[in-house]
Image 1: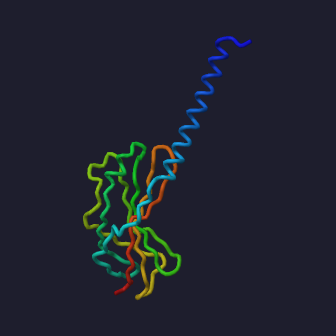
Image 2: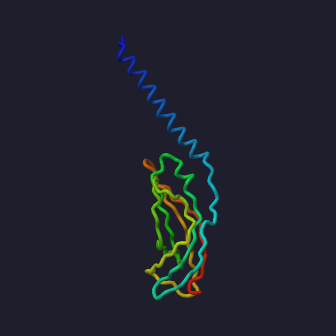
Image 3: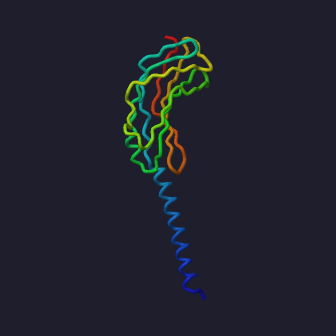
Length: 156
């Protein structure tokens, strides 16, 4: 025979297991039903200048993170500009950390960067400039999203 404490403990254990199962299934269903938005062209390059061993350019990102920060689990967003030249040579040319307490969560002003590339492309090579973001939650997996890209010709 079971005493009252053992019966209460069994009921509580079953209730806990059902709650954990419900939360797991809820997360899986949300992940499967979440609409994946197509990548928009959220970046415009205004000026590209080649220098001795690199390049400098002005660009305008058009990204609004206010909707993303409405999620209570999002801690910060790491926004960066990646430049791919020739084959598989990738380098990060610009970065910004957007925290939850940042007042202006929109990136829409003209920004400038000067970057010395390790592998200097030849004039006429194509440069793929990608604007990407890493979403850092308080708890969970870091998510990398492509926000936009532009294909440019180096040295012209």
